[in-house]
Image (cartoon, rainbow, N blue to C red; front, side, top):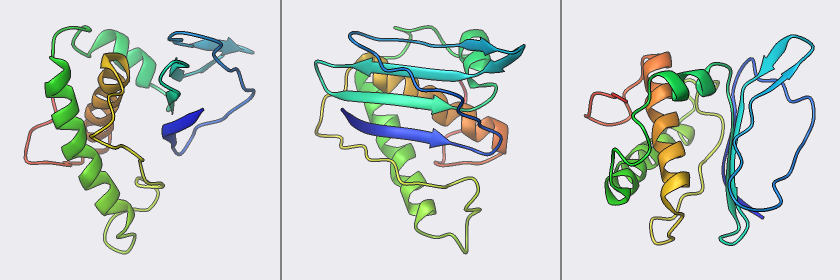
Length: 144
């Protein structure tokens, strides 16, 4: 399965692996009283998945983000292209931008149709990341 996006940020801890057999899967597991804030969206038909491991993102997504269907898919694709282009520029400039924030490139090809759910999740992570870390990836004010 091709991974288009894997975020492993500071304070993230992976205890185990689970793979999705089909469709979309959203996981929010509790282990030993602590929350493993992992969101995984997988679509075996398209062979792409998004895995976001970042404490606080899942609760932010459920409490703050606009509901699915609020934005059109083309809006999400256009914003994701802008966000990810700037993200990758910052990954390539570790002396200028904090390499602890921008750890790895995101392989996002705008010519591939990833589907609404993948674009929705990427868009919301980019908004969450900017708000939490006081970053601006574009000239737009990041709002959910």
